[in-house]
Image 1 (tube, rainbow, N blue to C red):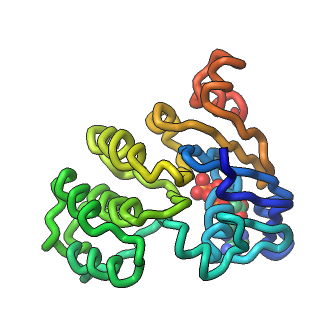
Image 2: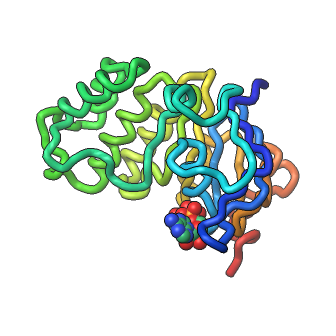
Length: 232
Ligand SMILES: Nc1ncnc2c1ncn2[C@@H]1O[C@H](COP(=O)(O)OP(=O)(O)OP(=O)(O)O)[C@@H](O)[C@H]1O
C-alpha cells in the first residue's frame, strides 16, 4: 500500500513545552485512521502541522511526497475542531465559496450530502444548531476530492442517528486513493469504520496498528484497549 503522509522525527514545542516528540509515522492511502489520545496528547497539534497552520520545531512531513506548502494544501482537506463558517453566511453561499476556492470541490456531492441530512441551503449558519453546523462543515470538507482528509473531532455534537449516516456514508465513501485521519474521543462509535489506529500519549507515538490486529492480538475492542492504556 502506498504511503500518502509520512513524518520523520516530527517535533513541536510551544515555548519550552514539547507537544509532539520525534513522531515517525507513515499513513497509507485507502485507510481510515483513528487518531486517538487523551486530552492534551497532541492530536490537534499533529493535524495543524500537517495542514501547514503551524510549523514543526524539528522533523519533516511529506504529503504525496511533497513538503508542506501550497501544493500540499491543494490535496489536504481539513476540518478544524471549531466553526470556520462566518455566522452570516448561508449554506449555498458557502458552497459557492468552496467552489471558487478549491478546484477539487464537488458541488453536486456537497448538495446531495446536505440534502440527505435535511440541511436547508438557504439557512444562515448562525441560525443552526451545533450538530447541524458540524454536519454542514463536514459535508463541505468531505466534498473536496483530496488525497488526505484531516478531521479534528468531526461529530462530537451530532445525534447518534445522523452520526451513523455520517460514518457509514460520508466518511466511508471517500475517495479510495485518500487517507482519512479522524481525531476523536468517540471511539466506540467510530471504531466500526476504522482501518487503523494511531495512539499518542504526551506527544509520543504509543501505537500504530490495524484494528484487525488489535482485535486478533488482544481480543479487545479499540475502545477497551484505549481505556486500559490511558486509565487515570
Ligand atoms: N498555542 C499553544 N501554546 C502553548 N501550548 C499549546 C498550544 N496549543 C496546544 N498547546 C498544548 O499542547 C498540548 C497538546 O495540545 P493539543 O491541542 O494538540 O492536544 P489534543 O490531543 O488535541 O487535546 P484534546 O483531546 O483536548 O483536543 C497541550 O498540553 C496543550 O495545552
